[in-house]
Every structure is written in structure tokens, then in C-alpha cells.
Amino acid sequence: MTRSESCDVMVIGSGAAGLSLALTLAARNHRVVVLSKNEASESATLYAQGGVSAVMDHADSIESHIEDTLIAGAGLCRRDAVEFIVRHGRERIEWLIAQGVPFTTRTSKSGAVEVHLTREGGHSHRRVVHAADATGRAIETTLLERVRGNPNITLLERHMAIDLVSSGKLGTVPDRCVGAYVFDVEHQQVKTIAARCCVLATGGAGKVYLYTSNPDVATGDGIGMAWRAGCAIANMEFVQFHPTCLYHPQAKTFLLTEALRGEGGVLRLENGERFMPKFDARAELAPRDIVARAIDHEMKRLGLDCVYLDVTHKPREFILEHFPTVYEECRKYGIDMTVDPIPVVPAAHYLCGGVVTDTQGRTSLPGLYAIGEVACTGLHGANRMASNSLLECLVMGDAAAASILTALDTHEPAIDIPPWDESQVTDADEEVVVSHNWDELRRLMWDYVGIVRTTKRLQRARRRVELLHAEISEFYGNFRVTGDLIELRNLVQVAELIIRAALKRRESRGLHYTLDYPATDDANYRRDTVLRAGDFS
Image (tube, rainbow, N blue to C red):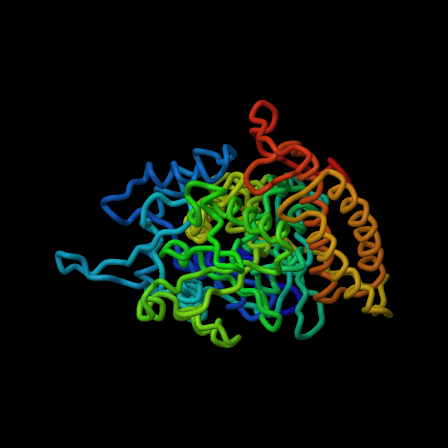
């Protein structure tokens, strides 16, 4: 592509949500550009181990899946969104199978071959479709192969969106999203890409915390861009910390799939004592917020570096068949999970809030859609239930594609976007400022805005983030953009949104737990925490 280009639809992000949407649109002969800030496969989808939740068994029911989701969401799920997404689960699994995704299968008593289902925390039935313990990798590689072979899709790897462009900012009404400024990492230049519709599929923001299960690309880019474009953002206080990530001094944080607990794994202290039953009747199968807080409590109470996930009571053959990825990763660090309990700690994992959308993926800015973790559809409420994330990606990718197909019938051709102006900036003289601010931001978020919060910690974090935000904005305004600066600018915006939302919610609910307001207050806070442009600078 040249320095200035146009297309029908620009998809920012290359995980399951973005790729599935792109394939649907391309099948109708629309020109789609997919941006990936790194290699296209590098997304949260690639690292998802557990699977996709969907009602596939006659003993299960749509109503049961809906009820489980509503319970996990602690009173904040939007029922219409839950019902819509759950009811379309089976058809999206069938679509993935048609694309060639190699899900794990079993032979029924009648001799029929069917998908194997496992169970995870919060689910009352086995309803998690999986490909061993590397489901995300199977989905991502299959869809990406399809995308690479599609002539209607242009895949731009190592391209980072800087900011969205709206017609209102260009002086044209009515206001709608018309494209974006994009940084070509390889050639260190900024492009303009005009599009009749734009889709944010940028994933989450785990890198705002010091310890996270997320890949390095999860820097909240879509939320930062949407906020600057004037979109409403909701429920940013609800950050899910996955209870069980591998703890080892040489290991980059590695998530240990919830299916380990679904298949009977138990959590133990260093002395071998099992502790989850004293926190919740569902024990290890309680929702993630409860399990993560229990682990955090025990670690702080006893001064522990970690706790242990024990599956040694399961047959070796079972472990090797169902959890080959986890087994091999543990073996790298001298842990044989068939005979040794695995050391684990919680880590930031999933953002339940995001850009407010309807059940068609539409944001408050016409022409702009958001799907996947970047969006807040109302499915997750105050706490996401296991394996509902990939379900949401796939259902909402399809729903947004259907809406876009209708919109393209009425939208005008892509309009010209003014070129990026670098006349007032120079090359940065001290890149250390970026790296220092990056480190400080992630550490203060971990220390003050983590699993357990207080008003004093949040206020301290807000003051420090405001100073960082001002410093980063000044740096951005004076120097040419770099990949690190683009990400840091978005991360500090996301951090501020998380803190502001957390301070507004004066109760404990789901993933937001504060010592100052430990009770749930339905009378005053059974509602979304919505932030809009103008609420603060």
C-alpha cells in the first residue's frame, strides 16, 4: 500500500474477532484491510488455552448457560447481550469447524464422533469446546491461513493505528469515523488509510499491569483511540486477574488453563493444605474473582511467594493427552506436573470493560465498531466467566459483519484524509523517558490498583498517573512517533480510565474489591460505570 490508501473496511487487530469478521466481509467481495501491530498471529487469541463455551450437549441448555453467565457477572450483565451471544454459540462453533479448526473430539456411546467438552469455573455443565489445551492457537492459525489466502483482504503486519479520524474533526457533517493514521513500524513512516467503516478488534490492556498473562501487544490501543475520538467507555474498574499463572523466576508469565481445575485440579498451600473450600462452596470451580482474591489473601496472610495447583492425583496419560502445552511449558522449568504441584500466582488477564457497543458491535461514533475484548457489550458484567471471551469474539464478529454489510449499502465512498503533519516535531532526544514512564506506570498500577483496592491507594495512583499523562502528552506533542510511544500513550489513558471508574464505584462487586466499601450496594451501584468525553480531560 502507498502512503495514502482507502478500503471498504479497516479492521484494527488480528485476533479471532477481527479475522472472523474480515473473512465474512471478504466473502461478499468487500475490500478489507487488517492491521496487525506485530506478526499477525501475535494476539491474545493465540495464547488462549481453555476453549470456547457453547451449548453443544443435550444435557445442557441455553437457559443454563445464560444463568451461569448472569451469576458470574454479579448483577451487571445486560440480559439482552447475554441471551444474544449465548444463543449464537453453537452456530459459531460449527462455522469454525467448517473453516478447519481441529477441535478435540470423542466417540459417543452410539459411535458418533462429536466435539469433546470440558468444564471450567462458573459453568454448571461441560460446555467448553477445545483443541487440547491450545484452543486459541488452533483457531488463530486456521483463520489466519484463510485470511492470507483471500484476495479481498490486505494484511498489514507491523502497522500500528495511532488515532482514528472522524469527519466531524475534518469539518464535515454528519460526524462518522472515516479512517485512521497508521504507523508503519518497518519503514518508520505514518500512512493515512481511509475506510467506509472501521472496526476496533485490538484486544485488551493487560500490559498496564506489571504482571499479566497477556502478550506484549495488549496495550489498550483501541480503548485509547476510541476515548480520544469521543466514544463512551464503561466498566473499566473490572479487571480480571487470572488466578493461576505459572510462578518461576525464569518464566515469562504463562497462564495455566482453568480446565486444569475443571478436571479436578486443587489449590494448596506450601504445606499441602487445600484452602479454597473455606472461601466458597464451589471451591476451585468458583468464578475467577473469588479464586484470585482467595489466593491473594493466603499469600499476604502467610507471606508466600505463590501457592500450588495440584493435579498429581490424575493419571499421567490423562494429563499428557489433555494438557500437553502446559506439561511441556512446566518441564522447561524443571516441573513435572504429573508428580509435582505447580507453583502459581494471579496475574492481570482480562478487561471486562471497554468501548460501549450494542449487540451489533456499533459504538457511539457512527461508522466505528468494536468487537472482542476492546468492547463492552454487557456480556461479562462485573466478572467474565471462563471461555465466554472467545465466544463473544466470534459471535460479535459475525454480528458486526452483518451490520457493516447493511451500512456499506448506504455509506458514501471513503473520503480523503489530510496527510500526517510532522512539520512541528523532531526526533526524540531521550528515549529513556518513554521506558522509565512505561515501567513506573505498570508498577504503580500493580501496587495501587490491583486485586484488592482502597480509596487511598486509588487516589495516590490517580495523582501519579495524571503527572505521567501530562509528561507523556508533552513528549508525544514534541517528537516523532515511535511504536513504544504510541503504546505508552494508550496505556496511560487506559490506566486513568481504570482508576477513575474504580473511584466512582463505592462498593465491592465482581472483580472490583475495595476494603473501604466491602459490601455490594445494589441500591446505588447496580449499574454500569460509564465515562464520556468531557467527564475529565
